[in-house]
Length: 207
Image (tube, rainbow, N blue to C red):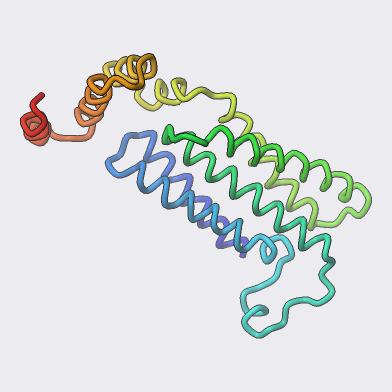
């Protein structure tokens, strides 16, 4: 299960790098792979944190001695991390709701971290340390992105394309202006389309 987690996390990280390198299709790839990671934590957190193998589930050998508290904590931890992953998608794609998701996910992760610290001090069990590692990483990531503005992200991602940044700033000031929205879209196409494709787009849209 940990191997699967590492694979999904690595794929999500690679897609994030491709997104910030402005690779064509990077946004879609980032969204799909990060959502896959979110689904992994949401659906399989009980198996991951309690070190239960798929084979045990298939053969109906789910450990009967697993404490209910551990199952519940695993489920809530998976939920918190999946919310943060989804919030990251929304935040980095400038979609509505990203900041709220990051706030909820990071808040839950901090609470889980405190509970896990308390229990780890008492028991020294690896179960709590494995949860701690993940909740601390995702809580820090969630808080960092929550405090980072969309404009800061845009300025970094499009740092070599000042015209796009300016078009984004102008649209932020007047979000209902359709002309500014088209200008932003045009500047985005300048980045990703060839000159010939851009000419076709401008002719088709009367620009």
